[in-house]
Image 1 (cartoon, rainbow, N blue to C red):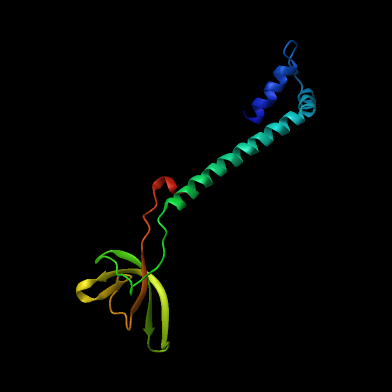
Image 2: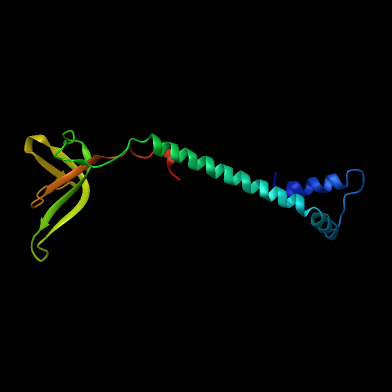
Length: 146
C-alpha cells in the first residue's frame, strides 16, 4: 500500500457515513491526527525493504558458501591440465634500467611438451618462474549481475 493509498483509506474510514472533506486544510488536519498510523506504515515499509535486502544477501552468501574453496596450488605439488587457462602467481627478472626481480599474477597456460608457460598470452618472459596457480572461477551468471 502506498502513502497515497494509506491517506485515502484514512479519509474513507473517517468519513464512512458522512461527506468526504473538500478542502486541503481539512485533509491535512486528518493526516495530522493520524500521523502515528502513517509512521507505523513507514516503519513497516522500511522493515519490508530490510527483509528484502537480507534475503538478497542470504542468497549471495549461499552462493559464496557453495563455491569450492579456492587457494593457491604450488607448482611443486601439482601442475594444471595442459592447455587449461589458470590464474598464476609468477616472478620474472626485468633487465635494463630496472634490474629487479618482480612478482605478479596473470592468466597462464601450461604446455607439458615444452615444459613451458604462456603467460598473459605471451611467451619469451626472461627468467620466468611460476610459483603457484589456481583454477579460474566460473564466469558470472546473468542473474547474479547487479
